[in-house]
Length: 134
Image (cartoon, rainbow, N blue to C red; front, top):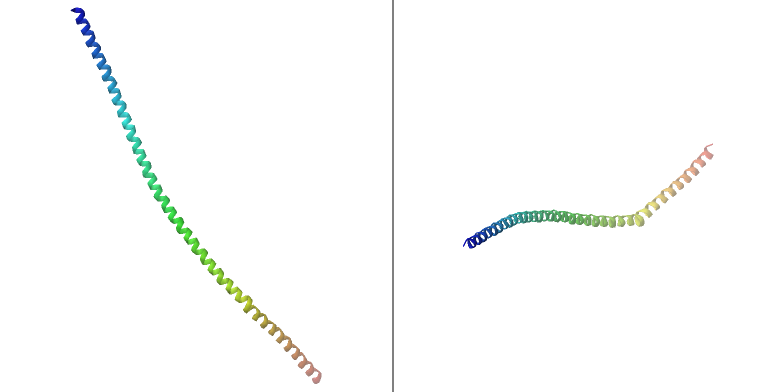
């Protein structure tokens, strides 16, 4: 019976040792799971923060695009206004070229001719008077 008692004690000690090792392994696994859970929570928080940053950046980019579209519309408006002004200036220069400039040229010619004629008449009148008077 002592052999059986010794065997039973050895089996109990072995069972206790297996239970202690198993409990220790389970505790290590629990700690590892807690660390993993903490890291997972941190990772999820970072993903949420990144998503929030992307949302804010998307809003900023949307505002930039809206301002760029307004700028393009303003440039188109100014360009169209410049085209209309250019058409008006082209029309005005056409009027000047085909109507006013020839009239001014004719008037200048008439004035020059009148001056020449008056000069000729004045020279003849004053020469004759000079001949008659002298």
